[in-house]
Amino acid sequence: MTIKYKFDYDKLRRRIKDLFGTQEAFASAMGVSRSVLNLKLNNASDWTQPEIILASKLLKVPANEYDQYFFYLKCLENKTKQAT
Image: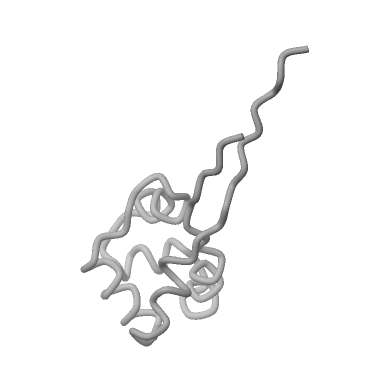
């Protein structure tokens, strides 16, 4: 069994929806395309430090809560099938 970790952006997604209505509107405010934002929210691309700072300002996330929005880990267990 292999254990992998990914970041859980559920709280970030909810904040985006609450303040911007859509991810597309938030992406526009960030100056990125919707597809780039989607890659970041799906762990296919990393957030840069300047992006985290800008996103936090736009979403009114205090610095002491960055971890809850950008660094919250979720554990994914990949179970390998055993040969029978």
